[in-house]
Image (cartoon, rainbow, N blue to C red; front, side):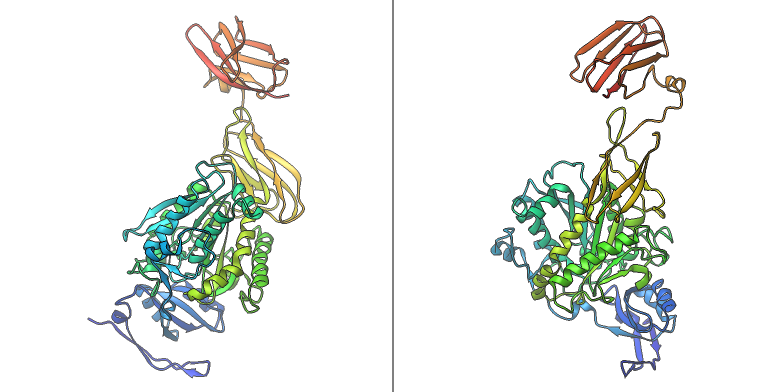
Length: 569
């Protein structure tokens, strides 16, 4: 049976009276998973309340707000009684210029393409990404980090000077179009990949960026939304994914916790991105949207400011100032200066920006690139010119602030350690080193005390460290000593203990059982010292040993054991 809901409206907006509307839900959602509409917002609290029910697009209290909703969400909105008006989907306002695989090959494929004035068909998108890796195998590889039931893939280009190996360097992520109908960032990310690869080795700034970090670029985060049911065009794209969920409301939230109630269950795209983030430990990231022009920085979900609010405002303002310099006078003027705190704009629960910042201890912003969601293809090149320098400048910040490697003082092995800035960090603003021990802590100018800690290790504190300018890198490598409560406790698990370690002139050894012989090896496996023992404790003079790593082997009647020893001078 048809669900028929009649809404009587008598509200003035821009001197136009909303006429009585009849909304037939079956017809409204017959061909699309979502509806696009606007409604009047009298108070900021109203906007916050409605944002719990539907997906707010853009809005300010005292004005009209625009929103998306699936059928369940729209029923909840209708129950509020707020006046509204159904709008045409933004992705249906014009037919965009598309390029298929054959046209891409005719155009020359990946060959430092100067003008990206098209949207690729889905198959052309896959081909373009593959072509990047084929043309620049030493600099680029393509990672497929998930496939959807539709067959469409989540792809990322990984760019680094030694792309086949993971290096001790910060990792950075750009991603676009988590809202499938906000497509400006999609071709811009493809052009950014092309630009980085083409300019490497001849452009000093690009070479420094590619040499100094591992860059991940995911041009299309919601392929099912962007291509909906047709791989040949982005016309008709939806904000939501194929299951009718806003992926940018689908993440664990710093305040709410798990996926917000109105966005359950967690979507496959969300879980795949979370796995990608967990595995790669990105220092900084940004996700690209459309519908207005502004840099939006955390938090989205809470009014309290981030510990690094000054840094956020600084890097966001720098992005806006760059596009103001390179773009027309009316470009990127959202909120006047092109920058806003997320919550100050409107509350978003379950957003990816806050997830990456809170749960992954990274630094992510949301960048709205164009007032027009489905940007006309003939405007893509201009928007690239407006944003190119800003995109590169933002990336560079991943190499600024405190950076280094955390290792085990005895073995030299990397440690996944916590870095906490005393009298500064709170609400998960601390950072962690990755599996290679590499850490990066972007931060505003100032004098800081850093505390490094890890389970099973003694804390290490460094005081009065100064960052004197926003684009300064401060290298600090840290060695943490294992936490040994007593020699006797160590002997409960080890056959013998040597200490101190690292040692300089004298080495003390204590054995669980009587040892017969003690041998000392260098890193080549050559025995450089050997002696017989008759006691459970002994002292060795190592003052003539060069600094480095050695192995100590003890041999008993019915046992043997070895330990790594570090000699420092």
